[in-house]
Length: 251
Length: 382
Ligand SMILES: Nc1ncnc2c1ncn2[C@@H]1O[C@H](COP(=O)(O)OP(=O)(O)O)[C@@H](O)[C@H]1O
Ligand SMILES: [Mg+2]
Image (cartoon, rainbow over all chains, first blue to last red; front, top):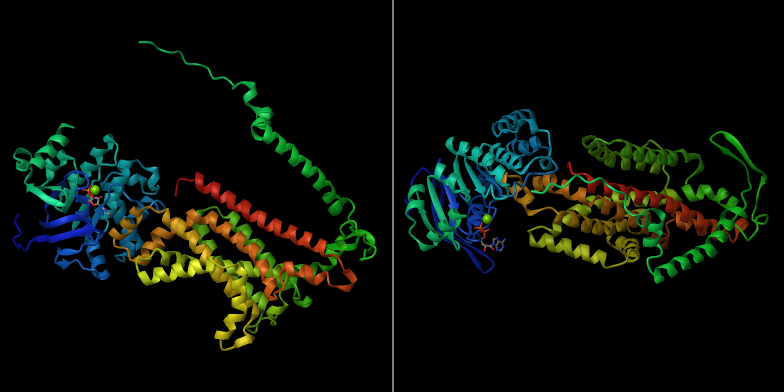
């Protein structure tokens, strides 16, 4: 694993260790992400994928090691955390839209309250983003009037509303019915091609092959193997990855 | 491949619908159930007719001539007094004569328009809340009323500020005082309750501990003891000592008491909010305050509305305890009025009357809460 100190690293994770009580959930994670890089993280359930990316925007606290996001060290300081969170957006498995707000209000919340934008400009921007993810006509509806795929696209638009530099995706398609997966993946592919930095936990290997610069395989709280997509699928080294690939590619 | 023909729909068998079914499933589903049904009917039979007889059929309605909204309505030649009313049935002229005290207490007669305007405002407020259907407006209307209504009411009832003659709090009484204690108690305790509920969920140990201790202490003691403490212990800590208004002391006690109950109701609502809502709010960079005010509380309070109303109903009933510390609320007026030497021995009429007034108010509140509950259960838009 390389930890060269490259100036263009937008995320630098070093010697990261995280425990839930006694349970060692992340073990010595070292990982650098360059600006504009698309990283796909995969691995069996419970291997610590969510925990890892949730540390990057400090939704989870960690006990050892350090994370540098765009030059800012992650600490308990509330001010810094808010700064980082406005640059790092997250899309969740279960969308987590705000059910009491209309779609457009879901999008304009952070711009208005966190970035002090006016109602008008944030609304205009929100409608543009909704147009981009293909659901402009649903702007005045409420989240549970939309299908799962539509809701996830709203969630992506919401996270784009603050023009983040980094996007974190935590299994964005695994709560969706099969026929809705591609509409969400299409939006993500488009985003990836526009040069935003992305860490994406997913088992959609088609997506990984298409856009990832690197794929990381995790198991039992560790990074077991990482490689570019071609080598990752062609020449897996560890037995655990071979087994994992066999399981998800045959299924 | 076999294709089934479309079947026409049929009515269920006759024994499964209508009155017969209802009787069988609800009243006579078993021998024991049938027996209980008959026993209850018998109890109603021996209790209801005498009560109706006492309240209406044999009761005395000789009010004399009553002016209602400008019309003189003649009930009898002269108003009945204590002697001309029998002892076997209700003597409603007693209530009629003491009505002023039941409704206004010792409020000066020449200033009675002020409580009347207060009652009118309260009624108007209820009508407005029920008429405004649109959500965005409704929240705004309710919010602005929560702020202005208490201020306007206070100036109206208490006077002062160079606007109206002062009416001291010991002159307030009856239904007026009951309504004031209940509504002030509810309005003051609600924000405190919300803060306590958030405090109990807080990550900050000290705040969590304080909130939990406060809530559990208050919920662990009867309201009466809190009223006594507010009445006798509170003045010891205060400069002004015994001069400190008796009503204010009671209100502080009641507000703290109710805050603990509201806190638990709101906490129930908070616990129903999925973790994902907190995470989404955090991840877009909202502060703790913004997260709670914009995302968590609107959802949590909405779920809690039926319980909030329920808890308010309990408080409304509990306000009757203030008579223990010498405040003259509607219930205390029963004792007061029946000590009039011209109307000795008419407590029963007083209690029945006060009971009915309470029942009408509380039953309407509980119906309203039930309606809200149904609406929130079926409503899936927001
Ligand atoms: N809040 C928590 N408390 C205790 N253990 C947790 C918590 N969250 C996750 N874990 C544990 O940490 C491990 C990694 O979880 P997670 O990162 O969610 O895995 P993945 O996303 O790869 O499925 C799992 O064994 C899980 O049970
Ligand atoms: Mg996960």
